[in-house]
Length: 399
Image (cartoon, rainbow, N blue to C red; front, side, top):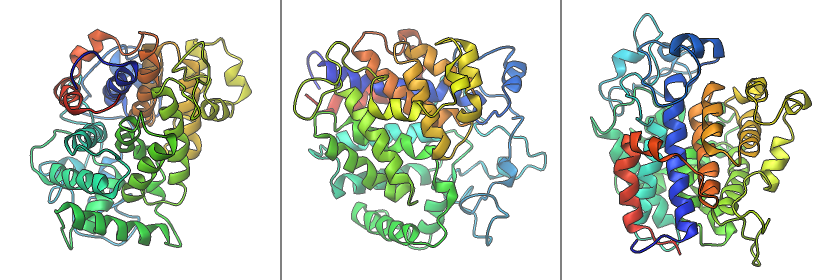
């Protein structure tokens, strides 16, 4: 990309910054299920980037299945993928007898988690491939090839945890071990068809952790019809999170993000709210899901800490039934103040990294239309984003 950025290009850029900022802010308190633990471990609320503590008050890392999805006790024992195929030097951290190792042990303040890093690499793969339509099979094949190369290369990142979807993917992958793009796509499609038709879908895949890797498909379809952006995201998520409920949730989120990035553009021209392009709070999906937050939450003063923290019960759930509603609640509540929204998400604990990544993309993109997105000071502290986002922008092709 050369010359001055258009407002849509700026919205895409700020969405990436928002994703990275939200993920990194939340990283030290990811899966903290008691907000008192946040205040105790960090001497108050999180107000900026911080490193994780070595231990985690709610950690169940030692119970997690090193050979696939879920916990090690939830099914037949399979060969380890942790320490052998992925997370090459981390197996001992998963098997420590104390069982309180922090999920993101080894990361520093301003670092991003594995899911956000994968999202950045998805964006880089798509722009480097020069795809005119990122919903094409070739685009997914290129992304999968880079994904496998990244996770199976020792030292490619410093995170300690890989969610169930990563572990299950490589548990299935290890027998054939395809690496070529087309072979990988065929493998992933076979796995997806099998999983989606299974009588008992893997509930671990019905999780908001599916959103980071689909964000670039929507963002890089900013100047394409909304149906194309939605299709790009849904076809990809079927390969990473093959669960029957997930495509519907991804469709809803993708439509909302596409509208925000495009400034609320309607398919036939004009804007959803011409007086406020890019407004997150007015989007139908945001209003519908946000309205499911209990009335006693909405009764608290708008923007107040009481209102944010009173919603934390709904915010903690990783499954989409609670997580998407809480994501849209925060998007509605903080549509005019991205920084406050990202900090509120962080300090609610629970599944704040993945929820935050999706929220950060919405608030960052919306902020681009008001000149009030992710603070410059925060961008300077985001190490991974500072390295990768300029590379993405160098090859981006959005009008």
